[in-house]
Length: 149
Image 1: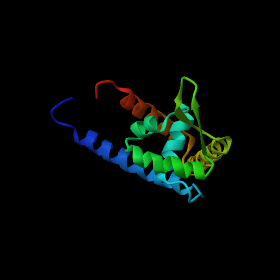
Image 2: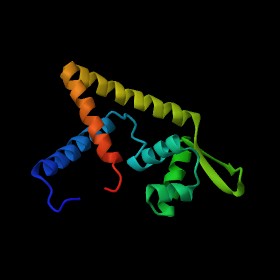
Image 3: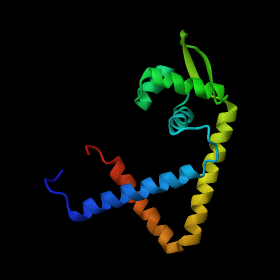
């Protein structure tokens, strides 16, 4: 990394952070349920993406205390969004996985958010502007994937 950051790099970093934060908040607003906190949603999303895990693995991945994860797991069990079952490799350990209701819910919420965003992009941007957004996202992806930074 160079000693001095250019003004354009600093401005781009600020703008990206602000816009992505606003977009994230707007997408969260589309969730009509009041029973899922950001912590609960994060655990469900992680289980959906990574598959079954123990509570201690979830706590480590989410960077929360085991006691905090226990509370999250209990609340998700009460909502019938997760289930526990013995680990086939170690019967003393319990694995947590999504219920079919949770999978359906996550898929529906993703579809709702994607359709809102696609509709907003179609209504407010020209085809050329949408292509510019795709090009910019490819550049941001390159930044994210850059090693050693």
